[in-house]
Amino acid sequence: MKCPFCHHEDTQVLDTRVSEEGDAIRRRRRCIHCDKRFTTYERIELMMPVIVKKNGSRAEFDPAKLRASLMLALRKRPVSAEAVDEAIHRIEEKLLSSGAREVVSGQIGELVMRELKRLDKIAYIRFASVYKSFEDVAEFQDAIAEVRQERKSTRQ
Ligand SMILES: [Zn+2]
Image (spheres, rainbow, N blue to C red):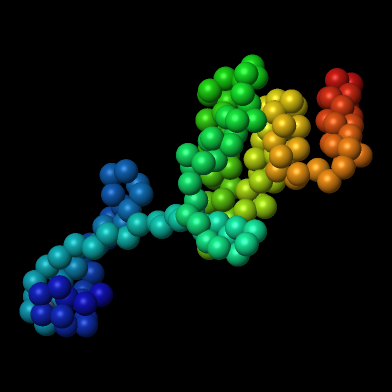
């Protein structure tokens, strides 16, 4: 770490401690050249991956957009705002913990579908029908059959 006063390359660490919130490491340093003291902070950097769209263009992750597409699928469905918040949180956590710098938009679509499947089957079908733009009736019926089957198995 360069000294901010004389730009000397070597500094000595006098003291290291974890911040009160536990989210940073604070280091008290001394420049071995000019003897001035300064503090550095080390923090965890968590960054949302950049979204790669189908056409190859990049976009920043937009939580408002994510919420909007979930809300659209869940329109007039009996799902609490709290449950939607939790679903959004889980999607964000997954993206963050992946540590990936880039993620294709399709992966986010899959994460949304997984959450909707848990929240509300109708919303899931709504989203999937738009998102997957079912090519034909058979594909749509497959998705519905899939949901029905799951319902049966959860009942048992
Ligand atoms: Zn110095």
